[in-house]
Image (cartoon, rainbow, N blue to C red; front, top):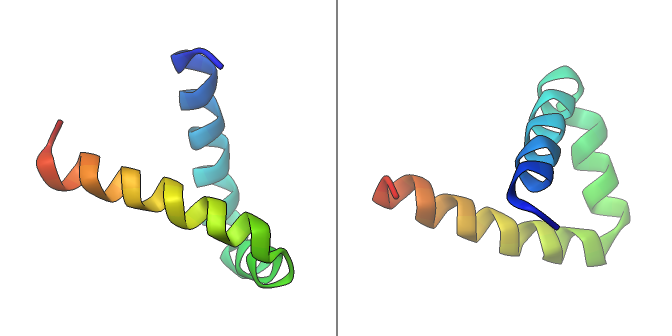
Length: 53
């Protein structure tokens, strides 16, 4: 996956969470495998934003 596509997906996810955070939370609670994946992505995002890379 190229960088632009990944960036666009992150933007789409951000908009979805802003519009309906409860739906996103329910999705993660129902899909444990996805929750683990999102924890990994969240860790990366946290590292990037914490270090201002």
